[in-house]
View (tube, rainbow, N blue to C red):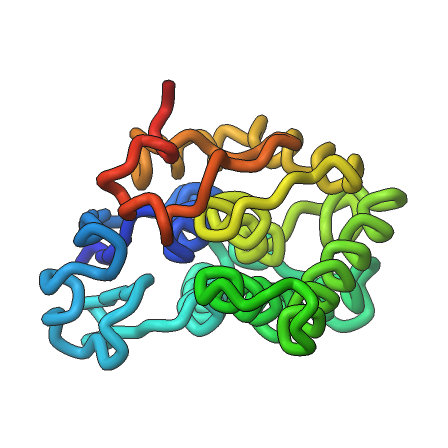
Length: 241
């Protein structure tokens, strides 16, 4: 029985589409369209989707449903350990293991929360000199500085080997910028990393399947404005020219 992944456009679930394509496993992709910014009722009403958010995953063979990107990633790496899953992770004692487990957890534990805080405060038009805004922006800069320093000497998050950590981080560095525009003029090593990501056939297939109309944000330039103030997907700022 084939796996089913429910994907919401311009969302964190692109990470799991990327993971599936990297592993080359068979799956059904069910796409849901924002309404015009939040998740539509079709997503919120899925049985078992407690939060009504993406991604949402079904394994009919095992009779389970699962949400949360990190949990889905762990499940897939375990289920397909002998079909490429081992290649996308590092085990204790292997070169790159410490970097792998650090950045695998850094994404959801540090980077994405920092970006979300800054995004919400910006959307609320909290002044830049406000203490909370300064705290949030400092968190973003600190997280990006960590990555910039790492990519100065490493091709991927775990070193020279591409892993699931690279699948998990991609949304935070790319599509999330549609919700809080951010340029990468000060981060040439991150830009190099994104160029390498963009050249992977699995990433190209994932974006073509999940978000074919969206312009991937793999370069230095920031979007013109935030989807939060531009009317969501009714705006054209996210579409390919």
